[in-house]
Image (cartoon, rainbow, N blue to C red; front, side):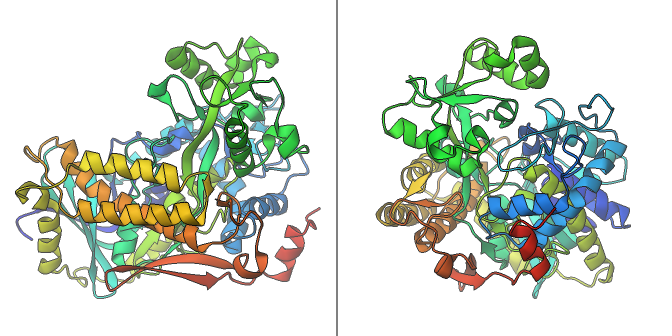
Length: 575
C-alpha cells in the first residue's frame, strides 16, 4: 500500500453535486475530517441541470401550503411506493433547508412583498417551487460550493473511485485513480457517503452528461448493499429534439409551470385527452407517455416530437422567467421561443430506484456506507415530482453527513484495516484491458448497450422485449469481460470507459430484471402487457437487487407500515 498516494479522512464523500456538497458541509460541521471526491471538476455537477426550482412548502405564494400537502403530493406522485418516512422528513424539513440556503447567500427570485417566490410544477397542489429564473440548480451549487470550501473540506477533483474497501463487514476505505495521470490513489475512511447521481448514460437519448454512469449504484452493489426499485426510470417529458447534436438536452418543466402548452402536429392541445384536470402540469410519467403516444400514432411534430409553446406569454415575460431556455434554443437550434414553439420528446432523466437507505441516517445495509441524492432509493417511489430532487438532496445530504460523522466518531483511529489482497485485485482489474492481447472496444459495447436499453427497456415495456433486453445485456457482459485498449494511462478516455461500462452493465441488468419482474404499470414503469395497477401483489413491495455469491439476486421486500395519522394525510386529511 506504500506504493500508492494515500489520504486519510473520517468521512469520504463520493460525488460533489448538491447532495455530496451538503453532506460534506454537514459532516465537517459535526467535527469530522472530510474528503470530497469528484469524478469531474468542482461545479460541473448534474444539480445545475435542475433548472425549474426546489420544492418546499414555504407558503409564500399559496398560504394554504404546508408539509402535509407536500407529503400527500409526494406519496401520490410516487404511487404509494415511497419510503413514507423519507417522504415525511423531506416534506417537513425542506422549508428549513431552503431558508438555510438563502442564509448562506442563495439569491432566489422574490415576490412583491420580498419573500422567496414560488412557481407551479406538475403534481404539486400549490405553487411550491422556490426558484432563480430557470437556473435554480446552478445557484444552489454556487452557494453550497462556496460554503463547502470555507468549512475546511478537502476536495479531490477529477478522481474516479473504482472500489469500496471493507474490513470484515465494515467500510474501511476507497480505491481509485486520477483521471489526468492514471495514477492510483487510496483513501482510508471510517465512513463513506455515496452521492454519485444517476444512470442516464446507459441510454442513448438522455439529459444526463458523461458522468452519469451508475457509479454509486454499482459501488454499493459490489460492496454488498441492496438496490431497490431499479425499474423506475423517469423519462422527462420534454427533452430537445432538434438538431440531432442536442437531442435529449433538458427543457425545464418550468416552461410548463409558467404556462407552456403542448400541441401535436394538428394543433390539438392533446393533454386534454390524457389528464383534463391537470393538463400540462400532470405528473412527468403521464406527460411523457402522452407525448410518446401522440408520436407513435402519427401526430408528432416534423422531427418526431410534440410542440411546446410559451410564446403567448410575451417576449419580456419569457426572457425574464426562462432566460436559460431562451438562450439554449437560440444558440443550439436558432429558434426564438418568444415567437415559435419548441419541439420536445421524452428523454432519460432520473432514476427513482437506488441504494436502500435508512430514512433517519441515510445509512445503507452495509455498516459505514451511506447514500444521498439520486443514488439513494425510496424517497420518490415509482415517480418523482419535479422540484423534489433539489429539496431531497438538501434534506438527505444533511442527514447523511450527520449520520456518517456520528458513525465515524465511534471508531478509533487505525482501528480499521485495508486488505492488501483487495488492493491487488483492484489494481489487476483496472490494468487488465492494457494487458489483454486481444479484446473488444469499450465504445462498441457501450453503443450496443445504449441501443438495447432504448429498444427493450424504454418508456413502454413488454415481457418479451424485457426478456430480449436481459439476454442482450448478458451477451454484452460476456463481451465486456475481455476489453482491449491502447495507449498510456494518461488522459485515456477509453480506459475510463472500461470501468464505467462495468457500472452501466450492472445498473442496466438491475433495471431490466426488476422491470421484467414487476407485472403491472405504476409510475414511470409502464408495461403494455400489464397496463393496470396490481395493488394486491405489487402495491406493497419494493423490488430488491443484491449480490449473492457473485450473481445478481432479484427479490422483493414488503413496504414498512405507514402510521394511521399519515394515512389520513395521504387520503386527503391535510387541511
